[in-house]
Length: 222
Image (cartoon, rainbow, N blue to C red; front, side, top):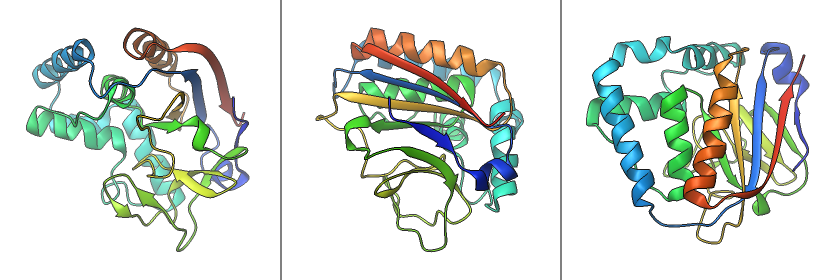
């Protein structure tokens, strides 16, 4: 697994961060019908049990919003990916279909409320640091174009920023060439359900993406 550390700048502002990291070999598919059926059932369940105004109160999302504010970013203007997914689920009864690897990640996210990064591990160069975005730092978000990541929590490698809890980047996105996958579940405060989310991700990756050769690591500041 890539070496992953939490930078001092973000640790000082959000000292209780926990990163649950999963790296594994995967088999890419444009679509997995069984996985999509499971996602459909989860969407039905959420629409019957959750209201839009309750999304921000989900523990993982509430903690993430507090962390954004501590870093200097407005979580209402730059929505966390988990919050954006859940709002789409409740307002439109759907989420985007991407591929089997990303779709399982999104299922974990709407099930848990955690914003989760998903990357082609072979496109990441060198060690990874979790920090805070700088002024005018270049970043191309998937489906968003150039994204202002100043004051936003961000993952960087030797080439620069490649992942945020609002949007992953084009540079490290999962494609049909992806063989090795890195998934990072982000908790900004100690939340017990991160272990459950990690287990769910392992099971989904194994069942729907043929995942093998797992490496797991938990990174935290304290």
